[in-house]
Image (cartoon, rainbow over all chains, first blue to last red; front, side, top):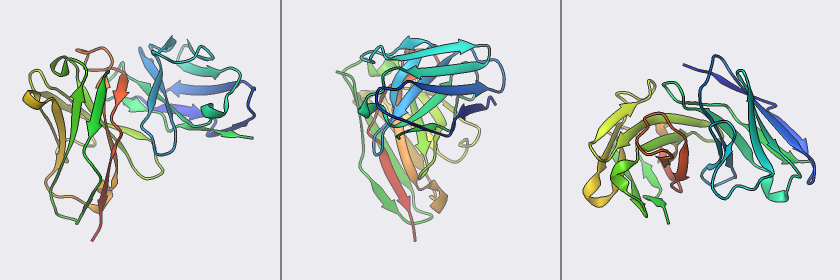
Length: 106
Length: 122
């Protein structure tokens, strides 16, 4: 099974700053998505196909890939962006998630 | 509007059985896979398995095969997750979600249910 390792575990930033979240795969991954989860809520799809924004997602969210390293970038952080973020690979069975990165207000 | 509405929270004793549900609306329920995802308290997301309501094809993640049963009733646009004998370690939040691309067995999840909290305690 493909292991996804997210870093950092926790990221402390201020509103207006840029967040860079990493997701590294243990082997080649053909498809990857990013989700945002706030306390007490279901995850929300942000990015699919490594770099495609889901419907209704602001353009301050972007995804990129270089080899087995995937990055979620959030420009100009808004107060509502502070949450936990998960990556998910869906190119290989079984589907797996990263352990999450907590983005907290500094 | 696409919606997935899950059944309410459950409190059960070890050894009891349980079936929770996920009702879809606002789209063609029979042409999109439904996935179940577990989230244990304070932990991350785990893929449990999927079902295709159109023909009841079902697949399980290796950690969950034999531990749960996933099914769907296309006549009432509802998917299910069930246990025959609950354990304390089954205590978790369970989410259903829809595959984004419809017919693909490996996919991202574009719409999610609100979650069903299952508590198993003696």
